[in-house]
Amino acid sequence: MKDNRIKSSTIQDHRKDHRIKEQNYTYVVQCSDGTYYTGWTNNLKKRIDTHNRGKGAKYTRNRIPVQLVYFEIFETRGEAMSREYRIKKMSRKEKEEMIRTSNLKECVQTSLK
Image (cartoon, rainbow, N blue to C red):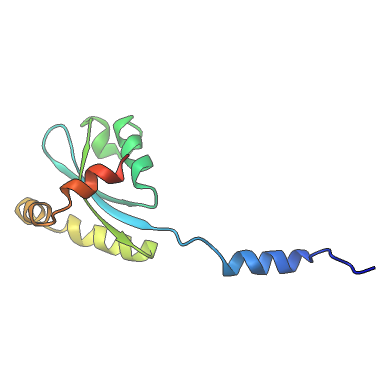
């Protein structure tokens, strides 16, 4: 009789080879007072919901509700964090221009459904 049991190390190797790639996002929200907040996450909808429950970043807690106005998708966490840093260094005018020219309005609304 043939042994059909799979070794646990084989299962672990299989899981490593077939990981689902996680998407990482850099995002900008507009707060209720008109200011912008930039962050990064690997679950965009959940993060926006967290901000709007007052459980997000200290900056947004007293400025809810927030509205997603811009995001970018990256393969790695490091890329998303790097982009977050660069956006945070932008002036308000530069951020507004980035948001205005992004053509993401429809995409932003769809991404949160």
